[in-house]
Image (cartoon, rainbow, N blue to C red):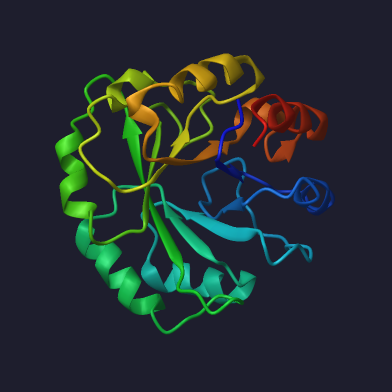
Length: 220
């Protein structure tokens, strides 16, 4: 079973580890610009392939702060992991419209929604036109990186046609569950898998061999 999926590896912190991870050729690498995170990034991103989208992860950040990081790190995508309103997303889109990535493409804006058993999918409606992708993560104590998988059956009645990232507790022990998920209708608009804490030796430092095995097992 070959999954036609993009892969995002998030929460990178250490330059030497970033270089090794980039050799796996993921589609996205995520850098967290949330000071309260134990994976907070404030270093220098090594030279990596232009085919990898450098993604900045922000939580309720001032738009000027976002733009500062976009310019400093030449980011290709912005992931909003807080309670950002549709108006915030619109204002951000306008602010970065004039900024182009290396390939001349507009930035991608990814809006995150934390999913628990009380998740109400109608909240997606107001974000349909103000972001490029949704990302569904597990509602937990931390703003991501909780290592917990939410009930993917909650996506059975996904009310949108917007492509989304699937996140939350994805690791080697969920490979068979992922394969099952992609046999269901709920996966129709799943664009990418987003992995983080389940592949860490310590916060911000990813285990290369485990990631290689994950990619091989899923044939991404």
